[in-house]
Picture (cartoon, one colour):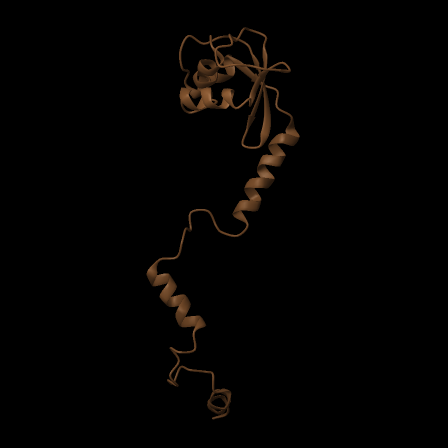
Length: 143
């Protein structure tokens, strides 16, 4: 089976086109040799794949006839990727999530108005709830 089709069939890439592009960019090798997308994959081959800035290493156990379900993938490959690579990936994801909670997204117009209400002093026109005049604030406490 061709290497691009193999990577697609074991669900390493979402589309076969994406798998072919990655092979053309020299991100996939068998052993220590960079390969072309027409290279045939055989049982026992060790593939090294560069994806998401980490180096994956997988061993081919069996060649599938067609695209597999996710539960069947472990019957055809063995993941030999080093633990440090997965830790590196996890630390990069944690760094991205540091600034913003996942799923929170951009503030809406309503959120921005409420933020502006907290931060701008133009909205505070000396109303009773305005505490920029500290003498007024403390005089109410003493009454």
